[in-house]
Length: 202
Length: 261
Picture 1: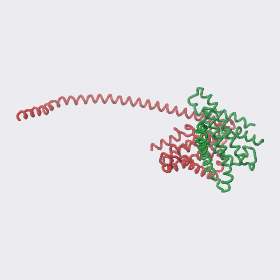
Picture 2: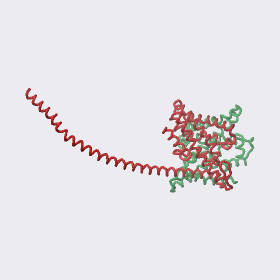
Picture 3: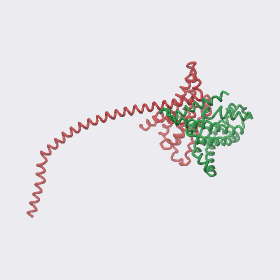
Picture 4: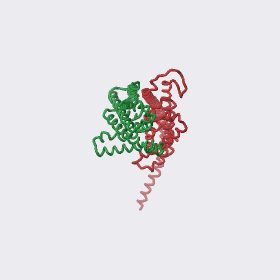
């Protein structure tokens, strides 16, 4: 149980994907102008990240490593992510057109989201996971990998939703011409990062 | 030659991928704690960018439109794997410090953006140049940001200790966002200043040119008037009798001939 809580706290707050590890900055800055689309993007990314971990982790451990072709990981992973995204798009279009209309435009963007490839690369790196989750390197298994994927995705959603709320407020103010757009979004992100930094002190 | 100059200017300054287009933000924020990391990442991206641009440009007529994105990603992933294996063997220190962000070059927006918007439409040489200069622009921006953050955050530059004064903020993740924001704002500001000055210069040059043209036109018209007047005078002097002599005489002669007939 304590391990479970540790994973949640570590993935969502202490090592937040966006503001601490800088993964998935592009959608974090690009799709955070209003609350609704930010939430949609966050949930879509969470779903894809969980599924990716569920597929890539066993594939790496039980196919690539025994065959001795670990160097193929990047190519294999990016193809799996692209296929997952394509598959979700097809399934959603067929079975839930409303959800497809809400999520549809974000789905193709997820393929090139570094957070997804990042989580796939992270969970297969035993040493890094051990230090992130505080578990022994040999104790790493598929359950941890999928949970980490899920909560890292939730961490992404939390960050992008906070960001969208702040940007909606900022949009009503007058901002210096040179600071408007990306710079002011990044300064906002700077303050979010400071807030998250407190969790690292725990 | 002019075309290549434009490509070079575009890559390094006018559409600098980091400071102007704000692409590939993840490695920019994560790896600029040290100037050395910036150079390492920049060179890795430059290599992948040149190679993928060349291959994509060479295959641009072979790859069907519908499957181009997966094809581009596959080509990019191949070169990233090559860079990873080479760095792991030759420069293990840099490999360690780039860590997770090395495989993430695959999903770096700069490379896919250049493949989509430049390499798939231009010839091999131009694409290679574009890759090189975009890469240089990226490397320069990363190194500069890394240097600023290293000096302020760690009190050193390229690992050489300068003083004992450190501001922890600049080496934290919040400092990364802050430095990047300031860099983009300063870059935009100086770019708009330069373009304003250039416009002013162009404007004054245009005014001078106009003035010169106007003066020339006045001189020309005066000269033309004079020469026209001369020509008219000579015409008046010579023309009328000639016309009288040729036209009227002939006509009257013809009339006389008709009458006779």
